[in-house]
Image (cartoon, rainbow, N blue to C red; front, side, top):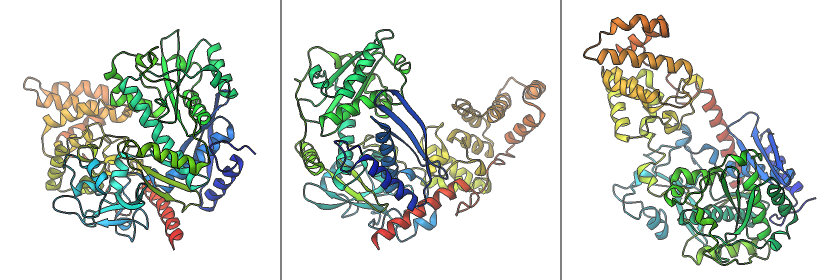
Length: 578
């Protein structure tokens, strides 16, 4: 059986164990979309046959490595409830003994400031540096239970082994999948999590600061035959490939591999992190090539001297998602900012973990860890404030994922709202000042599906309908314009709103007689659609496509099915602590 340097058990043994645990918990997964674009680079997707929301990707230098990677991601996201981030669990779960984990603790909302005992001094300073964060902002979106307060989970601060209570809301908003990992042992999982945190953070630092990296000597790379052979294949195809030391003089366990295409000028920079140099090198290679054909490598963006372009949030998201973002020419300067430093962290996974903690602690950052094994596989979530954050901290104040809590009841009862409730709904949507093309059901934690009529429904669409209930045709036409800008708008909906926009624009015009254009609109859109739009402009038939969603989601089967899945995981948590 294959044993890799980064694992505490053979791959085949790990795969069999994880597959057995999935079956024991009632999951039925299938593998699909296998890809092997070049030798020693594999990827696979994996999903549950009954719950397609459980969809993950694995990658590695072999089929087994990719398979184990996918299974590991499935367990780490199941164990941490990441698949359900922001989903409304319903009132029954929100009032149950525990909502997220049996170890959770609830803190009552304070009129001012944060509750006593929530967070510790370093985390309070990090998350509330400007004093703008209120207790109300930390209510988690999945429960939405403000009367119960703030739900927090226990993490252990590694510097002093003290328990620190971190709100679920902060975890969901700032960290998503960063810091999640699974492993054959507690320490293996923790090393994987910390390696991922290092990779994303140091990579972002190098790219946004325009740091020039030194090359790793070819003689060193040649010692890793599989990597060397694959990179030579790329060079034989005409690509320029550099292997670079991203450790910043041995401070951090990172490798960078860059590829440039002389024919198009395109470039990609991929990073890999792990305490063992050889594993970091492999990971950089796999990140560079997985799910990419050689042809795809010829459609990359060229480097730039504009660091602002590199540091744009959207560009950094491309880097974090698949390394496809724009990079700076400064990365390639022959005058590197650091000397090449040979590095490798010796020892077992416990020694690796302790060394990685030391690297973080010596730059005055803290590490908080929660371990989970209720599904029979060691998993953890590691939080390093300031290093693991996937989004700016001010997101908690200005773009919190719980902003839809106060809209949730309105969305679930849209066809049944009174005129007064519709006015309040309109005011709240306007006050929130959110992107009009954002998905309203997603904002509220409700699965959009054909059964409830919410599939593809945006803030702009609902605002347009609400304006029409109040006879405000001018504002409705403006919102309809935003609806028509929505990407992927279904043909029937697009036709309805184009017709509505034309009729509404004619009605509010001071020099147009709307009836003069009815015939041409009927010829374009059909008599039935024109009549529907006329009724909508008169304040009728506005919510005919929606239903009143029941509190138990029994008439929204996909949402109800997902909640049933969550209940199954809740039972596993409960059984593991009883």
